[in-house]
Image 1 (cartoon, rainbow, N blue to C red):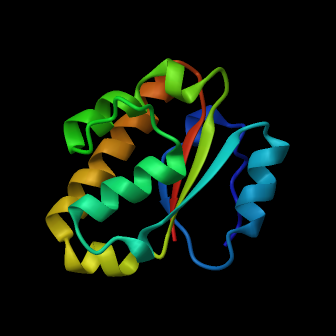
Image 2 (image 1 turned 180 degrees about the horizontal axis):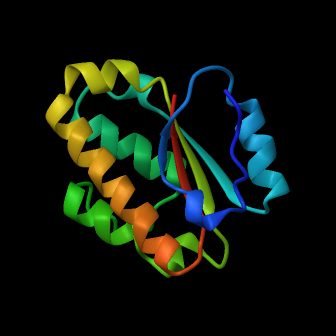
Length: 129
């Protein structure tokens, strides 16, 4: 797959990804965006999902490990910082298949965050690998 121009805010969103993610990390660096990889292969239930998101995304201490708290944090300028971010959800297939309702909620929240930051001209990319 071809990596989009990560500096293009209007194109940012939640995207499927197949293949190695090294190129995404490199492209994030070139676009001066933070890069975070979340290993969902470690997430077997909701608690593990939130623990892995918290660890990989370096969420604030006050993060409440639920979907409402995640929605709030993803739209928090203090957490995001001045630039944008590129998030790779690695090994997502198992969690997506085993927890379709939670996956749908997570994907919706991430999509909403992408739109929120797009309106503020800040790139927020999510690649589901």
